[in-house]
Length: 469
Image 1: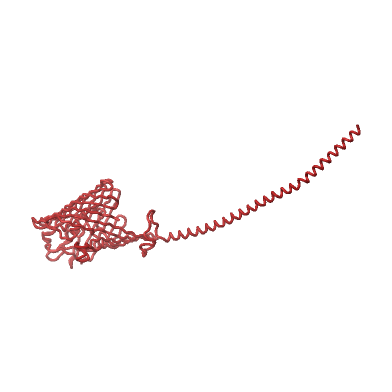
Image 2 (image 1 turned 180 degrees about the vertical axis):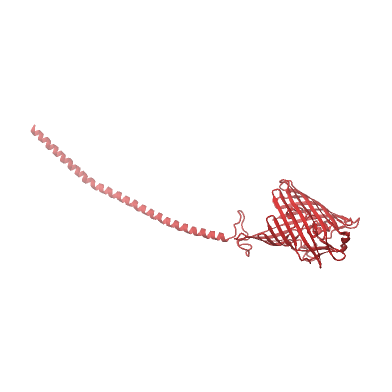
């Protein structure tokens, strides 16, 4: 039993040593592999680190390049903004400038330049009862009551006669500036072709129908001040009705353009204007103009406006002078436009005064008359018009007008051959197939009466084609 026990212990010890030896051999064999495996991972990590470092370097380079690009872009934007600040105002979308540089290169910085006008073609047939209006005279081109012939009883004007022309075509230029201090400056000039022929051959209707340019308006304005030639402050152009004729309601309207100095403040405006005296000689032997005046004509106007239209009152004070003789006169004018809705309006004017002659009806009457001793006497005159406008739709509209003027002549001074009154009716249709293009026709009847009760009538049909630009 003892032998057997000892043998078992020895076997167990031998077995333990063998296991320890096997474990040692195994560890010895595995250690190089572990070392080799660790070395491979380190290399892989090192490769990844190197790759990351390369990517970082690339990102840093790209960031530096982006910063340089941003700096260049900012510099370019600054240059563009500077150029825009120095360049003229931007052109509205859809429109391109005619040229790269300013049209009015000599103007103040920030000046805008505009141009406009219209082409107007007129054709008319006229029938007068007491003789014919002289060919080439103003009465053949537009309704001029003083041109209506008045002859002896039974006088015949003959067959109707036709005139065709484009002399009232018009163009204008305007230059507008607002300074850094807020001051407003404006220069305006306007002309048409109603200036007669350049010579006897070229200017008549034989060949070329050539006509000279006529100055209508030329003025400069600075804030509230205006200096130059334009419509008289005594005239309300906004009250004039739309006519196929050049004026239409010529008999009863004020109509004067002349040089003046004007000041406007809110609804008030005042002016001093070119003085000129029209004179009828003793017993009406002749009419003439006198430029002997010293004092200018003085005018004042007040106006109010609203959605309903406008209303205005104007006053005129004048001195008349011929040689050493002087006389004074004054007049008032009330006018306006009253809207009767979206499709209708009424336009009107009433004028009255002493020495109103040259301001009304294209000088139908004179301002003054001379007596037998050569002294001046102011003549009283009255006039006005009323017009109704109706729009059938956005393209077709009509105007009905009545106009009249009358003068209180002292027949002991003027005689019986001067104009006592004139009146006219007008009816028209105007069609606009496209914006700015008007095609119209107008029927008119006019009459001029003398102090001796002689009368002359005018009947006319007039057509027009007008394109505004």
